Image 1 (tube, rainbow, N blue to C red):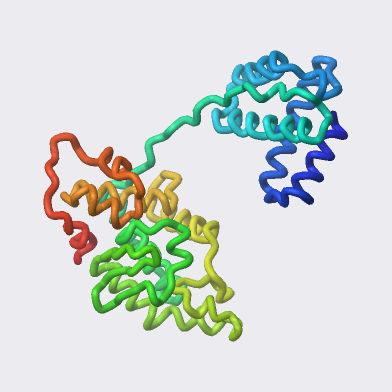
Image 2: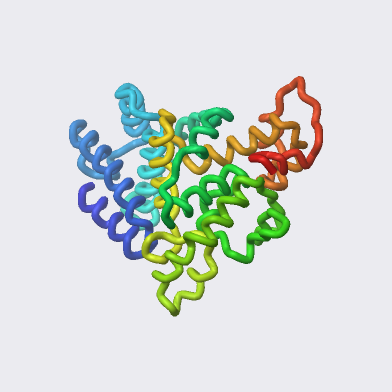
Length: 297
């Protein structure tokens, strides 16, 4: 089976062009399967039955592996045996009728207003990085932008006169005075520093609002690292992510009396139930534009 795993690896890399991290995850999971099968005296994939795989997964659960890890194992092994069938190595897929456990749905962490205050009111360095970072944090909380939307935000998306973002999907998102002040400060005294580092032929980067030290588009990982650093400085002992700020923004809008359908529109949710589950049962909808008053607008 070791040779079949190597062939599967070659298929993932050279035929499917699978991402490197995914390939490595599949290989780790298949090595675990290989070792478990060899302990049972099974050395060929054609000798692995559905019952054998069921026993293997039961063993993973007994080892108290994380639910997410077991689910990934199911995905890797099902893909491997599907490949073997398609490749003619085996005639029946022993993993075909196996079902992965349901993913555990954890309630997203929501920052309270005091924690938001600690995060946003901390001292930023009085240099381009500090001005950029303050603008990023203020804008994330004031608008509920997704990570991908923030790093791809263009100058044309910002309407400074109206104090709102005009997103490419036609959403109009107001932001408060604190975010407006942070953006002004960044545009006046910070962004030029990053602009000077842009390759003169990189027209795309010249249109982006936020850039990294090299004058390139910020990555999602870079944004997460930035937020993690400020969370630590603020003394918030939690694994806060951009999604935490986005979800906290939605919850605070609802708590301030915003209408669920209005919040759905700003956030770009396709299903209003994503918002309505945040609404307290004893609360009636109030001013649908109350979000515009968040952060001192």
